[in-house]
Amino acid sequence: MNAFKSPVARLANLVQRSRDAWKAKALERQQRLRAAQVKIRDLEHSRAHWKARALKAEGARTGADEALMPADDEPADARPRLALSPPVGHHYSVLVMQLTLRMYLHAGRGSRGVARVLNLFGAMLPVAAPAHTTVLNWVYRCGLAILNRQPEWRTDWIYIADHTIALGSSKCLVIVGIPANTLPQTGYSPRHDAMQVLAVEITAHSTGPWVAAVLGRVAQRTGPPVQIVADHGSDLCSGIALFQQHAPACVYTYDISHRIATLLKAELGRDARWEALRAHCRTTWSSFQQTDLAFLLPPRQRIKARFMNLDVHVRWAQRLLAYHDRGDFSAIRAQYVLNWPAWEHLRARFGTTRAHPVRAIVGIRYPDQAAFCQALQTHSDLACDALDDRVWHLTDTGYGRFLDGFAWLLPYRDDLVDYAQMMVQAKLIQSHLTSKGLHQGAPEQLQAALPPPSTLTPRTAIFTQKILAQVEVEAAKIPTGSIWLASSDIIESVFGKYKCFTARGPLKELGKLVLAIPAFIADLTAPLIREAMESVRTIDVEHWVKTHIGASMLARRRHALIDSMLDTETA
Image 1: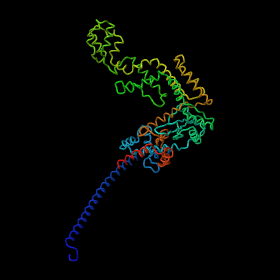
Image 2: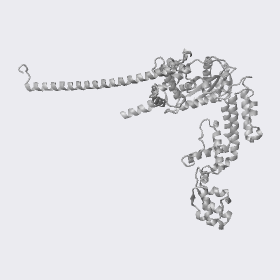
Image 3: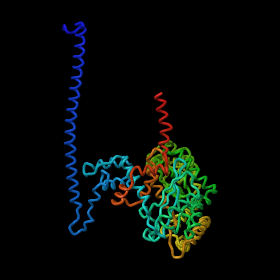
Image 4: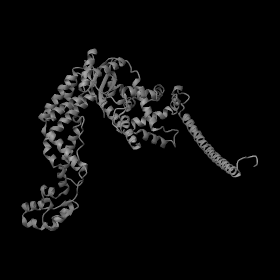
């Protein structure tokens, strides 16, 4: 201690602080050592667990390979080993990708639902469940790969073109095609898998020159089309006319479904009775949707393309009138009660002397008609068989409730005969052309297939002749001996399925999901999926989206609203 010049008390404090520091450091080192030992133990257990699962999965896969091995007399290329191996640069096998894509595109499951279903199978099959974002990524890549594939060069392509719109200013022009010589195999009403997506173009301003330019680019890839089927939208009509200047042999066919809808609009749009019927339907829906009459309400009226779906409203009105005519309203209410109007009617018909005794049961509710008849005979000599319909209508509470909601429909009985016949004639013509195709002899075939004009109301007969005149105009454009398409219903079906996918999103906008259109139309075979996954990268999808769509509405909404809200909360 004599070697130190500092006071002993100061040296003692220094030694004590040094000891405490080293002690704390030693305790910290021991804690880190203990944590490392626990982590090593957990990793060893985890490694052993996953190794056992991997060996089990490998055994199951080997068994599946052996079960799928062809016999000795089968060709070697029949082996499905390629489907069990992943594409280059991927972890999941083509078989898992194929199952995932088909569940998402054809089974109506969302991306998260597909992952949950595959997780359920994971305990029984060697199928690993991809994340929901991976499911969507596969859809986009397959769709883009199919869209970029070079179609077969032919001189008999038939194009079907139409727009789909959503929230925002963008429109999407979709062109699907089918060779004319394959139409007989599809019954002139092709399904999705018979079509091929030739173009998916998005623009904020669809004009005639822009449509013509898209058609020209598609024709350079496929060969000149012989027919284009579309509705009579101004931009489509103008664009097809411009395209025909460079392809005069191409025939533009006005889709029969849209043509009939425009004729119905011209016929019923100025019909005061029809507009009154529709107004009553709207009022009834809003007034009785939360009541006991909800099961009898009319169908919801569509905002778009409403004249293409009028038959459901006419059928509803006819069925409701038939329900009224059957006279059984027990589904609404099964109770019977003798009210004062019914008693007054009995007194007027049978006299006061005979009707007076039944005043004792006025206002009493009976569970059914039989109980009401028994009470009536107990208190009087009136026989139920002697009662007229007026009494039953007044005492049946179900009928009274029916009149509360639908008494307005009864005066339209005669009008519905005209409306129903017009809808039937329109559907017969439409179904005939979609199943037999459009050709020069179509008007004569329709005349023979339709009911004679003498069986129709005068208004329906005139309306039918208007449709046949339009069919004759379109049929005259078809070359002699050719049978081509008359309707673009297939592309409406494509849009309907596409909207099932967009309905799951927070905003109904045109986005990356338009790439699902080529994906769900194509036959997703294992070679096609392998080719798509190896030829199209995620960055290619992002580049296509940036070039054709731009920033999504949801991304812009987040940037404009959510980020500003976070800044406000931080401030």
